[in-house]
Length: 359
Image (cartoon, helix red, strand yellow):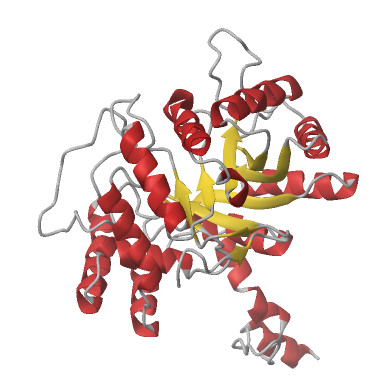
């Protein structure tokens, strides 16, 4: 597989690369990340390999990520129209302005104009809702996005980091009103974070929404830098989100490292290949702070996991899902009475013997 083996995103006519270039690391404004020069080199390397899907957000490095991408397009005329350019709104970059962010009509339109200016373009291909506000009616958000499509300012709409019930509400509302549909969904997904398999990914599959996982290496835990034989107890930065791996996570990390050794590839390539091969996944978001990291991540496109290796990774990373996942999994036992339906033959539920005796 290669970056120019394009895939269709959801129920749309939009085609994207199997790996989307994430640009949260573009800019050093927060004390980490890539310089504008290195960021441009990574962007150029991605495009040179046939990649066409770029993901950013207004909040990434306080708008600098968008400016770096916009500067690149300005320096390379003709490149922008061949790219599926995506950005997100929700984060407030206007201190003191209660309408500077969020999902209300005034905030959305202000955020879009600011992003268009920073990106040096007159339209966004995929505009993402970056979170939701329970006080704002979904009709206001979806009608505003539909108006922006009609105005030619955006082409498609995606939802990032929303719960499944809100995804369903937005999707059904848009369909009922004949507004622009939800084309894609972003969610955290990796061998160390699989709880979205309970509701989010099934919702996306049922509603015809493409899935773009982020953090497929789980903060670098699956990059090959970690192993139980050399555990770390040091947190990165002062953010509680970046804590060292737990004992349970090291079990998964070690399994990934073992498969990587068997295949003679990096642990990152194994973790990325696993994510991209999962049901419902369209394009995996990969990020990098250096050109070497980018090259190592893209190498995952050449990795093919055996059925045994995939099953091993599936088993060791199996998540505990929220109710009603377990109850739903047992539904065929009750519904089908031990007969074969759609190629599956569940065992007969014990209650069936009682029913038979009472006939």
